[in-house]
Image 1 (cartoon, rainbow over the protein chains, first blue to last red):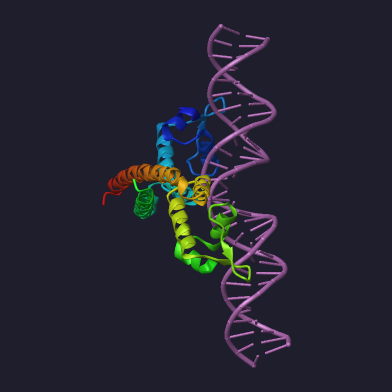
Image 2: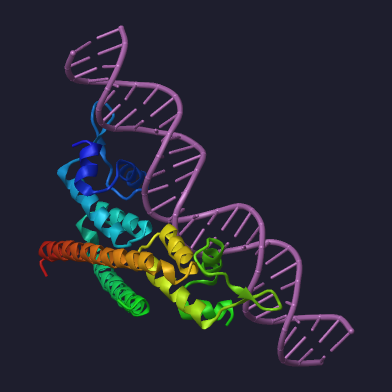
Length: 118
Length: 118
DNA sequence: TAGCGTGCTGGAGCGGCTCCAGATCAAGCC
DNA sequence: GGCTTGATCTGGAGCCGCTCCAGCACGCTA
């Protein structure tokens, strides 16, 4: 699978995928005889995970750490589990921020209605 | 109220507050005789709103537009109402992303448990 | 064999902060 | 009055996470 398809399936841009590879966020991507990147189903899954993590605010340094652990094999599963659990907790924090913002917006919108009187 | 207190109340950093002012995201901040910024309760409220919007992903360009509309008075309330409604819809999109990520993490963690067998 | 599509690299640019140097001023202490 | 401490100021550099672009290399097809 080529980079354009990898981009389509992961939701990341082509540039972002290359950037992530350069930055050590992915296990090494193999190349075809023509020198172009070839993405395996596994690396597509990896990209989807990266996309999901970045969309929910995980910093690149953490993703890099996760990638390094992954490459060291199953022995690092406890460490990886902990990272993912911590990120799952982060999701709750972000959900709370969304809720607070939602409440604030509802209040503002309410006030607008009162001012306009409609 | 001085900038350090404004930072404490809004959750923004001192540098970010100055940056937002420079960038036109706030109604002009008045200065004391000593040339230092003086924040009114209203401008604190404004900062809290900005903090909430940026925490939930509103781009600066939109915040700037909102600030400009605000300064043009009540006649811009319909436009402002629309902006806030659109952002409220964005919150739902982000909640969905958090949910998807949560599901993915749960699945990964489940797999880790199976591999480790505990 | 010319053109088109896709990909490559290296590097510049950008949004949104964050940090820092060097200056100023206010208050408290001797 | 001088001295230190602490908060603030401005201007500018630096950083993260992309995003875009120039210039080149393939391979397909008409």
